[in-house]
Each structure stands twice: as structure tokens, then as C-alpha cells.
Length: 297
Image 1: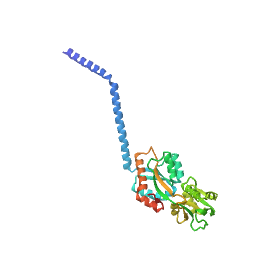
Image 2: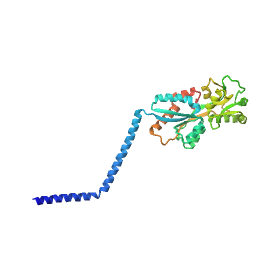
Image 3: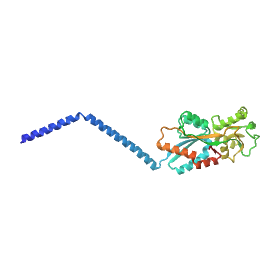
Image 4: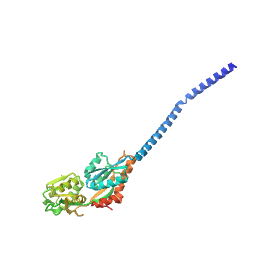
């Protein structure tokens, strides 16, 4: 009886060993399948963690930054628009960079972080579009501005318009890469006195704000700026003349989205919504028209 039991036990042990040995031949396939399953599970877990993190960020009230490059002539009004928008969208932080459109164009081309470009001329926007920086279909020609000739308030000058501007002792004029400077030079070219104007004593400003400040402080007898800039310092400068349509075309202000392949979904959404707000909402347009801009219908 004991022998039979021992034999039975021995048979069972050998069978178990052989079964394990046979199983070891397919262990590579089993390990591979298990590995794939683990990797899939890990990927799913990563996706879940990222989604949870995004939800937590939104819930925590962490702000999403939107970088907006604006022409210097827009700065005052856009600050009001920013304050109103952030009050209604507490999770969005609008960051402005205000300068001449030519300078802003160069900064974008050199890799500066920018989500929205609001230019004072189509030339800079068109160049960035051709170079692939602007998102296709995102540009809106939004505003018009007028070119005006100004002098310090209360000061005397023999200048009565653009045609006899050379009677001034000095002229504040924006540089050639600045839209208002380009418009002014085109105006003088159309009138036929560009060479005489360029022979004057000229204080060349880096942007329209610099030109406005030079005249307001009395550093120059006259200067060429936008109508909106003159209106922003109505107590310090007076408009001598406003350019007519036959002298120069109105300044066109386009706004567009700049390509950022590294932007998160939240950043893309915030950028698109702010651009849409500026371009279509009545509230910012009321502020812009009150400042002297004309909306392009």
C-alpha cells in the first residue's frame, strides 16, 4: 500500500515537472503579451493623469497667458480692453508688447513669444503671412486711422498743412520702418515735396508715441502722427491738418493669430477667444471708435 502511494506521488511529481518544462517553451510569448498589456495600461494612465492635471489647472484658477503684440498707437485703448476682458475672464492674463509694427514684426521673426499681432499697417502682417508666421484665415482688417499734422498747444507756426510743412524749423517724424513714418513719406511723395521734407531738421522717432511726445514737449515745431494719438493728448497738441484720401490712403489695422506649435489646448482656446472678442464684440469696438479709430465694415 505504501509502495503504491509512493509510486503515485512520484508519478504526480514527475508530471508536474514535465508540465512546467513544456510551459517554459511559450514563456517568451507570454512575457511579451504581458509587457504589451502593461505598456498599454501605462499609456492609458499617463493620458488620464494629463487630463486630470488639465482639469485641476482649470479648477485651481491658474491663469492662461496670451501674448499680444500691438501697434503703439493702440496701447491706451487696448489697456482698457484688457482690463474689461480680464474682469470677465479671471483665468486669462493678457500680456501686451506695444511698439512700432515694424519692430514687432522683427521680434516675431526672431522668435519672440507672440499669440496675436495687431498691426498699424497691412505691410507687416502681409510679410509675416508670406513667411508662414500667421495662421491661415485668421487675419481681420479691423480699423482705419487718419494721418494728421500736429504742433504743441498754444505755440505759433507758419505751417498750415502738409504742403508747406518745410516752413517749420524742425519736424518730428517716425522712422521708415514705422507705419506712420511710411504713410507720411508716401503722403509727401504724392504731394511732391518729399525731397524738401527729408532735407529738414528731422527728429526721427522709434514709434508714433515718440513723435507725439516730442511735439507735446515742444522739442519739435510740428510732427506727423495718427489722429487717435493726437486725440489722446488733446490738451498738449493741436491738429493743424488731416491728410485727405487723395494725399494718402488711410492706415489699415489688421489683427491676426500667430502660429505657435507648442501652445497647449488651453492657450490656443484663450488666444482665439480674445482675438474674436476684439474683432467682433461691440464693447471693445465702442472703446476703439471713441478713441478715433474707424471700424472697417
